Amino acid sequence: MPADAIEVGRIADAWGIKGWFKVLPHSASPEALFSSKRWYLLPSDRNVGGNKSPSQKFAAANAALTDKPVILKITEAKDHADTVVACSLDISDRNQAEALKGARIFVPRSSFPTAGTDEYYWVDLLGLNVFNREGVALGQVKDLMSTGPQTVLVLAQTSEQEGQPPVERMIPFVSAFVDNVDLPGRKITVDWQLDY
Image (cartoon, rainbow, N blue to C red; front, top):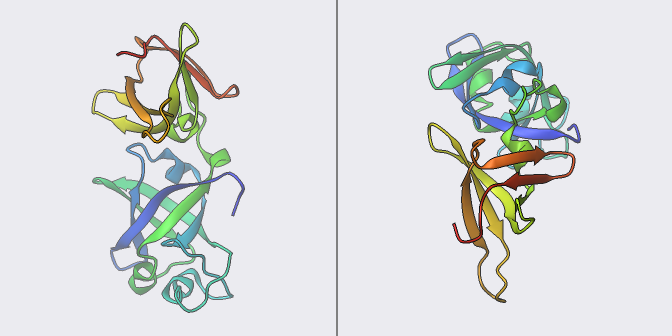
């Protein structure tokens, strides 16, 4: 598994009779699935190894566990309704594709397409510290939420009172509120106050 591997989706089921399979991407814009020609698969939360085909490895997931992921060489991946469908050199029929059901798909972060100016992958924003213009810490990005027309940063900040749950804040990720995103510095500066 590459050191920069990121989970980008799961295999939902077989699609058709020629070995294609349906993928449920974790993103509404699954460019990472389209840009990578090698997918690293893990069944559920387990790894499977051996010298078997990918479908045999997943079929034997409970019997032969190792620490190596299955690598699928993807020949084609495309949008289909609200999912993605794909095919691989390693999967030639429906039965093999069905054996992949539930597999988690990982791709190297380095294979993601380059983001445009003022565009960011959600995975790159997670864990960044958020400060307002006055330098007051507002929390750390723990999640992002799509509300349709915009994305919202979901922040968590440790409570100053011992034993209290973290304070949660939501800040729209739009230029009206976000002044700067410094990925190398792991910091986002916003026009926001503690009492908003």
